[in-house]
Length: 230
Ligand code: IPE
Ligand code: MG
Image: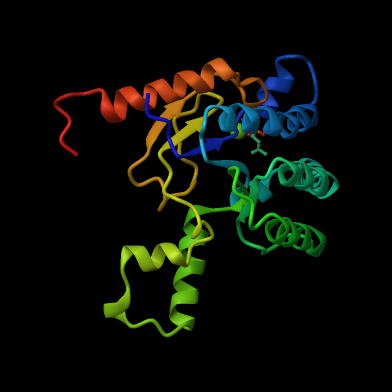
């Protein structure tokens, strides 16, 4: 069994998970946040080295204000403790996303988390918050132009160094929960050669068994077909 180095989750279905139990959507978001450490534990136990989690997209600001406030406030309230727990486990914390529209306090927490854990070696968690794949590429190009990089110096490798994920390997496996077959502007550059697995479970309910199944699906798709050329 080949273990993917980098697994990226589209954490979808919090609202439906809550609604299915007669709870408000906010209860789904709370359960969704609380499920992140469990999934990380499963992934690191399976020897996956890098886990990305798409918690909040640049498009999600269009949601009702109460829902936006709940999600942003929850992050603000829990991020230090969450990063502290990652640090204790030796996990490096990375943020991918734009600082635009984020409260200063959150920007500080994200930066502090990354700098506190920068030398950790036992896995990486890449929090995609206020993330958009197109925005990431646009911001990378802005920095490339500002650095006066000449056209003939630009390569795929160099562009990758200007992305928010510059310190991470490409994504091997995308797992989207909630059943929708959509990419939602997620890690567009980094998933160029990734395998896509759609899980029917909602994010707060994805289990070890389903993550293991996604890894075996990855093996079948990427390595299992003898006629495969590329
Ligand atoms: C994903 O769950 C979490 C966020 C985007 C914040 P949703 O809130 O999209 O839940 P559903 O898809 O409506 O069930
Ligand atoms: Mg959704």
